[in-house]
Image 1 (cartoon, rainbow, N blue to C red):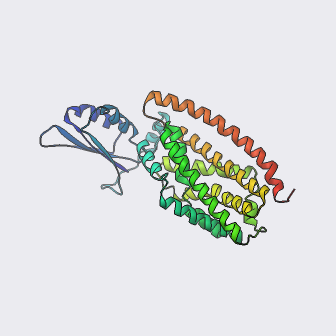
Image 2: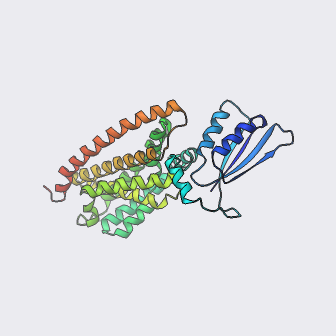
Image 3: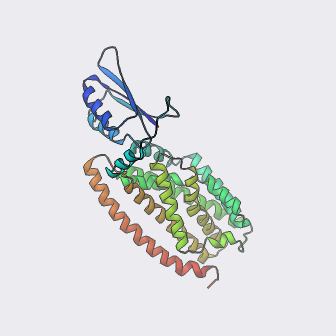
Length: 337
């Protein structure tokens, strides 16, 4: 559940109360400060509710200064809240009231996970080293361990969310972090391949040069699951492993092959990385659109919708082109043809 604390000028009492009731809160209360010029309300909301209230408050106080909204997570509340009847939930679905994480909370969480800092770089290097060892040793468990610590989910979701909201700054920030992470990981594994013996018979390594429909399905499912977990207010830690499955091992495999001078297999694995990135971006954008994640203002919504349609076409075209190229290079690469 979520708790919104809102402090505002007392003259806006009626408008604030109207916005609160439209948000269908579980409970709410008001406190009046001694001078009666400011009031504070606390609104208890179910998970996935409250976006309409957030939007109404921002519109109401856009040009004001003396207001503050704070969004808090609620671990528990007593007495317990009874679940809404199935008929009410079905009615809400028909009215288009889908439950989702609040836009502002999404931006804050995903933006913080898209920062390019020392922690991100160190985790990327460590996950790349572990992935390289797992691929070289043909050890599935070690490869999975690398994907657990890989911090690749944040910037990928950040780029998709920025596109959905029409936020160029978030897109650039996420793209810089994602590209830096992939470059750092690739460079780390490439250096390892130059100085340590490589097991070219490893099945885990060879598998990252094969491109087939199952690979595309995995990447699409990973991106969709990640976006759903975020918009539903659920933990995305396990979903991050799925995204890392699509990105980290083929990137490490490409660096290993390049380090030993096998340019064809390196190209096949690199194409697999690009293909997976596009699939994840495409599926996350589709989910964000389906869940109604969009800018607050109407003009921004219109521009974002147009941008989204263009991106669908571009991603789909790149997906088809890379898949065809990957089939041509990848499926013959392991046989040395």
